[in-house]
Length: 158
Ligand code: FES
Image: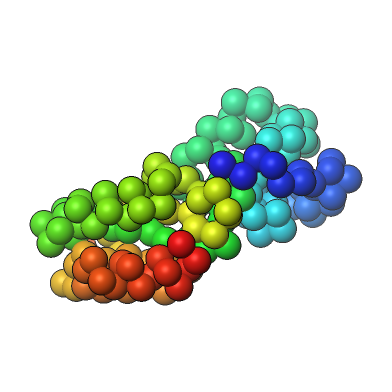
């Protein structure tokens, strides 16, 4: 968890919220703007959004937690996603994932202490024929074996 990073101020977040208030269904555009600007949805933004949209903080929080791409803490410098869906599991994906978590010393959604890598599960990357599949900073990687995993993690700074 990277709770130690400086958090944006209300003054920095408010314009990003207000920009979308006239839209129909402003909540998702607001959340996307905040995440794009700050790399996550800051905790303090939840109240600001709730007040601006006249909804409860629980409703805002529910949407943030429903969409897996919204983060409540910033990601590491590199994001490695490993496919946990069936086709990749049948090709050794589970062992690969266990090896990655053990090597990084974090759980799913965790970030290494030096902030280099965040690791996340993903459920099918559309690369089922080339499993186990992974995604590194948005780039698909197929046929990830122990050696390729090693290269990926080393290049990402592990
Ligand atoms: S099951 Fe892993 S990419 Fe489809």
